[in-house]
Image (cartoon, rainbow, N blue to C red):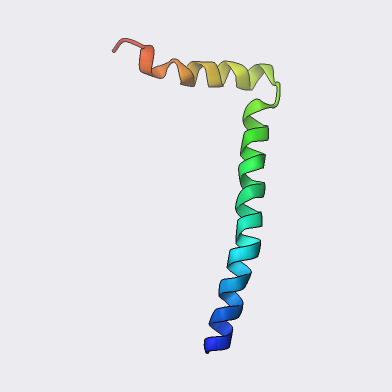
Amino acid sequence: MHETYLWLASFAQTWGLVLFVLGFLLVIAYVFWPSKTRKKEFDDAANIPLKED
C-alpha cells in the first residue's frame, strides 16, 4: 500500500504538472489565436462589466 501511494504521488507530481502546463498552454493558444468570430465574442465578453443594466 505504501509503495503504491509513493508511486502514484510521484506520478502525479511529475506528469500531473506536465498535464496542467500543456492544458494552460492550450487555453492560452485558444484565446490568442487570431479568429474573427472569436474576437467578437471575446470583445463582447470583455465589455460585460461596462454595460449598463
